[in-house]
Image 1 (cartoon, rainbow, N blue to C red):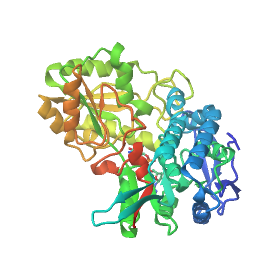
Image 2 (image 1 turned 90 degrees about the vertical axis):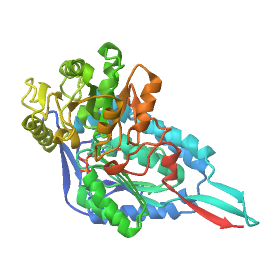
Image 3 (image 1 turned 30 degrees about the horizontal axis):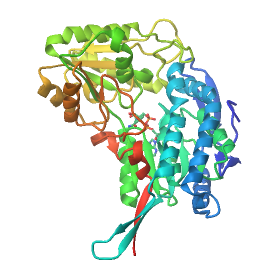
Image 4 (image 1 turned 90 degrees about the horizontal axis):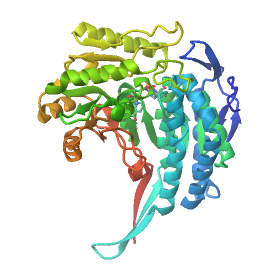
Length: 483
Ligand code: NAD
């Protein structure tokens, strides 16, 4: 099945199954605007079959459902090995579909899942899945942590492999089983992943994959056979999913949008030779299509023009081009709809009176592809739409502040709270400011989520945490047996 661009079956119950419906998902290349191929569009009957297969695997006491944590860990390591063998295919599939620069896909999409699988395999081996506690009233209590059951996992197109692994890696460590619904924009990589799952000897039905759009996602979320929903995507979809899960008393993890602040403190080193790569990673990674990016740059009034010049210089220097070119730093937007959205925000920024210092249009090198120039707006008020709403493109807003209190107040004046960064030459000063930012994660002089630490948001950026031991706990249910 690897890399074949026309697929006829779905990975359900450990094998390749004919789809229930006749619908197809066609993926268009963001680089060339040409069709790359197609796969079956999952139908409700496919979700039913996938949920049934996941349930059967979960309850199979002589198979997955009866495996020890050490057996699961071994299988996870085998899956990591199989993904390693396919890392080039995975990177290629992701970049060709969503426009992620291939160098970034090779560093993240083709590597992060294996990192997580191996980390959680290690955690599974040592995790206290049960303990006996002495009771206060005499006797004792056996406290067990059992897998939550069948998980409906829904992922977006921006990091389809890594964000799926954020869910299945801790989930497999816990003993859960999965119905994974990839986004219709990124489906081919899920076939490479399925091949790795089969080759790794993960028991049938533990991971099932049904690509489809939001209606299919909604069907999965509300399905009576699902025990937990793990979602990454927009805040709008997250709101609707949390309403359904609330009604059903269904546990849900929501990793949603962001509009984070990158606070440049007055003592920051702005030498791009030293910090250019880190600033790029924290503000523009993956063509600006990354949830945690610090897209509001908060600059001290005394150094405002210096910050504007630095960011303008960085954005203007970036190599924009075909995502599959290894030298590309900014590829195209994932879809034409996404480019329209980004361009509409650029128009709003201009209309609101922000000052465009670079970019703002489409690059001239090609007529094809959904490209947008890296764009910097200066003189932005934090109330402007470009400062309050998630653009999800290579567009940064630079906002002036006066003193740390003002910087923190502006950073926190947002509906979101996912990422953020503080730039300073004084470590303690940076940490002190980071503590005051209302957000689930903050980086100092860089931003890169650490697999061992909880990742997630507050406010409209979501509920719950992925990664770290906290990410494993999200797939476990505690039970007390009073002895
Ligand atoms: P989206 O919400 O439109 O879609 C995400 C996924 O959810 C897709 O698979 C889609 O088919 C499905 N979906 C949409 N509506 C649904 C519904 N009502 N019920 C069930 N499933 C539904 O988001 P997108 O445009 O694909 O991705 C971009 C968004 O994802 C951005 O807002 C970005 O910030 C967010 N994101 C968040 C994180 C994070 O960890 N917090 C990471 C990456 C992306």
